[in-house]
Length: 147
Image 1 (cartoon, rainbow, N blue to C red):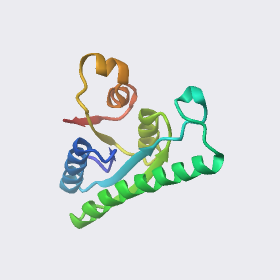
Image 2 (tube, helix red, strand yellow):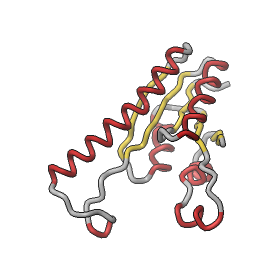
Image 3 (cartoon, helix red, strand yellow):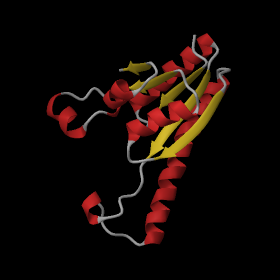
Image 4 (tube, rainbow, N blue to C red):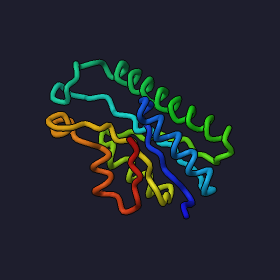
């Protein structure tokens, strides 16, 4: 059925439910799991919504975000290994979350993407956008969305 499943996580409660389901599914079908956390880049200009910081301070913040992202996927790895599921924990630096998820699925030759839907409705959905919706409409492999 599936050989390699990518699960995208941001460490949120809803995302953790998707991770649990992905681990369970991978265990049932004997698939390898790829746990992915997309880490944003620090905004570099006033127009990106940031307060100008020194290059050293920006590097420190990006390093902190990367370390947190790695900790998120390492936690997934620990849980999956405890359940006998082969897993790879990876992070990707990008401001385009959906594109990073799709690119990682392609890079690691995944045949299923598992994501959580944050369930935004109405104007919030329009204003904030939906990374899951973007993955659903642009991915060339199946996407399992969990609520």
